[in-house]
Image (cartoon, rainbow, N blue to C red; front, side, top):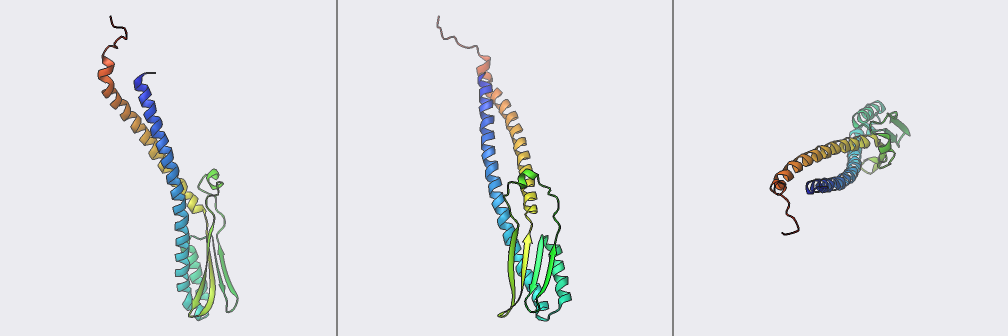
Length: 189
C-alpha cells in the first residue's frame, strides 16, 4: 500500500474514532438533559396548574375545576392527569391512549427513559385543598433523542465525506514533489 493510501486510511480511521466518541458522549449528555428538562417542566407545570386551580377549589366550583383541568391536560401534553379534591373526595382523571412510537423500537427497548410523574399538593394558607398528579410520557423524549441521533449521524457522514475529499486533495498536493522524483536506490554505484 502506498504512503498516500496509508495516510488517507489512518486519517479517516482517526476521524471515525473521534466522531464515534463524540457521538456517544453527545447522546449520553442529551439523554440526561432531556430527562432533567422533562422533570423540571412537569414540576413547573404542576405548580402553575395548582395556582390556577386554587380559586376554584376554595369556592368548590366543580364545573370550573373540570374546565381548567381539561385545559391544563390538553396544553401540557401529559399522559395522565389526576386531581383529587380532599374536601368532597372528588376525582378528575384524564388519560391519553398509548400512541404508536415514532422512534425505532430498538431505541425504546433500551429503556433509557421512564414516564416522569410529579405530585403537587394544592394549598390555601395552611389548608390542603387537593393533590394534582401529572404523568409525562417518555415517548416525546425518545422522539427528540431519535431526531438528534439521526441529525448528528447525518452531520458525521457529511463531515467524513468532506474530510475524505479534502484529505485526498491535500495529500496529493503535499506528496506531489516526492511522488514525481524517481526513487533513489539503496545501492550506491
